[in-house]
Structures are given as C-alpha cells and as structure tokens.
Length: 183
Image 1 (cartoon, rainbow, N blue to C red):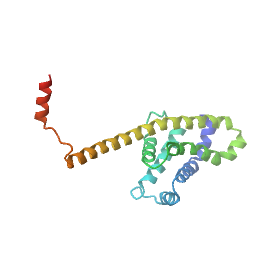
Image 2: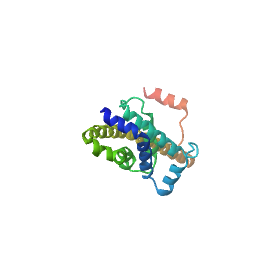
Image 3: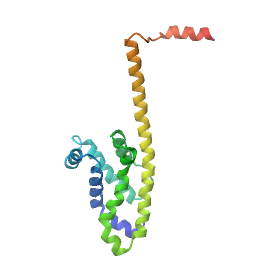
C-alpha cells in the first residue's frame, strides 16, 4: 500500500472503524441495531462486542497488509456470528464491502484534493480479496451448521422410532455373532 494512502487511513482509523461498525449495525433490524450500538458490555451484548472488536482487528490487519491466512480470528468471529443469524449469504457477507463506502465518506475530501483514486483502488482490491476469503469461511460455517442439524434430526428420529417401538438396538454381542456368521 502506498505510504500516502496508508497515512490517511491511519489518521482516520478511528472514524473509519466507528463508521464501519455503524454501517454493519444498520444491516440489523432497528431495535436490535440500537441495542448493539448502545450496549458496550461484552456480556450483555456479545454480538455487538464481537463485531466491534472484529471491525477494529480487521481494519488493523488491512492497514498492516497481513496475509489473510495469518491471524484473522476477528474475521472468523464475525463470520461465525453472521452465519448463524437469519441472513442470506450475500447479506451476511455484505459487511466487508461496507468498508469501501465508509472509507470514501471519511476520506472523500482527501481523495479529491490529493488525487489518490488510483491508490485507493489497490486498497479496495484488498477488501475484495478479503471478501472472497471470508466467503470460504462462511461456507465452512454453514456446512457445520447443516451437519449439526442433520445429526440432530437423525438422533431425534431414532429416539422417536425407539419410543414408538418401531426401532430397537441390537446388543453388541449379537451384532458380533451376526458379523462372524456372515464371514
């Protein structure tokens, strides 16, 4: 990243972080959003706390140009939260792209004055790469959720069949004998 752009982003880091958090909160229903923005206690508001910490960590990682495979626990945390919520995949992942708008709002004047649109393009490309990386994490989280639901459904079905005497368990000794007889 160009030093000039990085300096501008670092100078506006706090405003960008706050703006990004607010933009993410706006993806939630109004009553939920208001609560998550106002409640600072991590125990009373774990989702808001996770997103707030995640935004700051992700912004730092982007500014430091860290490799996405290295230490992106903040991204994992936000993705896990959004994967279990009632969002479509595109809506769940949209929070990453919101950063572009926030940067344009916060650096609008500087972008025009310093003519750094081309430099900003490289930073935005990095945000796009982050979104692609995050989507892979999101898919893995959703797969885990579906596996858990499937296992729970199997367990519940077996339990219901057993309760209604439509299924029974074969004792381990009997199962061993049947296996030996077939060989």
